[in-house]
Length: 394
Ligand code: FEO
Image 1 (tube, rainbow, N blue to C red):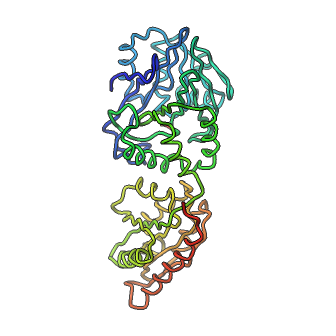
Image 2: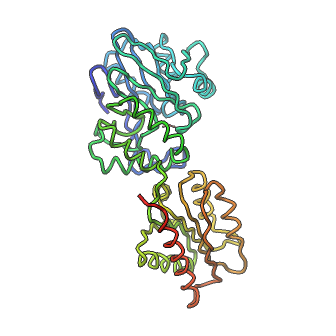
Image 3: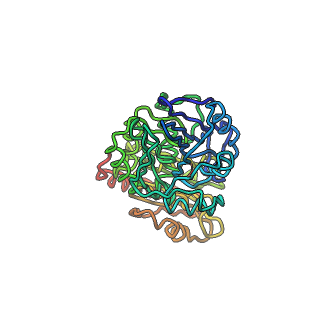
């Protein structure tokens, strides 16, 4: 991508990764991603805020050459994960005078992961400032978004927040700013679901701090820059808030059609009762879609056949993932078709201890569902409707 000026002497100089389709060998990236790095030129000092994934280091250097950067004083490191820190050793090699500015915890990570020697660091504390001449950087420690060492950097005079991963989106786009709000909302929600959701309570506090700063621009390390910060702050307030929607998420697998038959009946039963449904056939779905659906649904109903005596492994994977992501799900139930014996309920319940949800009595059927099984599914739908009446949905 070309160098893009956000404000006078403040540049976006990272890289767009149009083709990347998987992150951490886990997270699908249907829209690619970007690794955003920023250059702030003060009257006395120049700071590089974060770097790029090492696979894109040439592009970062091309941008530094294009801007005729001969001197970097500071490499501000908001987060030690390698998609932002991985090019630090290369920048230090090219600009040996530069110092890595970060706090103690992040310093230890960067030393461990990238073998940057101690003498290259300037260690700062929470709310410490760093003058660049006519500009000032302020550092706000914000642990657990999404590693324990994360930090936000605020450019005071221009009121630009550089929050690294927080508020980011895996989205490759030629738009510098978040002008296509529908697309950006979707990508940011997916990012929140996959990366930030487990830290919902922490983020509530950080949103408040960001609002107090009076930010006029939010420049994250992935995806477009928010020139209207209220857009992303409002979205985050909604996602991290305690409200849930009148929705049921139904991840399922069916090997020979019995479970699918029950799922299809159950979907209709809920829809007739005006409950929104989001079914995900786990043998086909993108797990990112499933994660997104968990951001604000009131209820999760997992549907599975038995493999030997336990749940299908794909269902266990989905349950394990839901447990890691800690959504604000309030109710959980299970639909199961078993062959000769079953420990589905025990095994699934043991997989989701992080979900502080009420378990609604599961529907367990032997073999293909029969005439007298449909009413069990209707009863489950009725119980969900009754509970959703009290959810105080947004
Ligand atoms: Fe984009 Fe946590 O790295």
